[in-house]
Length: 77
Image (cartoon, rainbow, N blue to C red; front, side, top):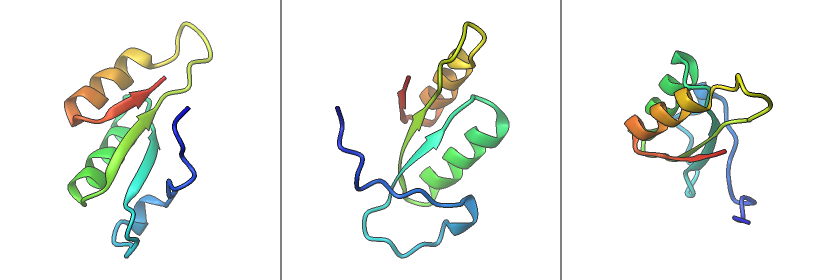
């Protein structure tokens, strides 16, 4: 299991943070909000990884995979 103790969780408005370790995990649905947030963070120099919560057959896994692939980020399922 990957050590995520150093990950920082921030609000989207806190993009100008002065943290030295700019890693963040974004909840991904593949929709416009999560995709835009991940894109904005990537463009701001953050090391972004996505996560999608799979709870049932209708979970947005396909959309989240597609968005993560387009952004060039790792997606955890």
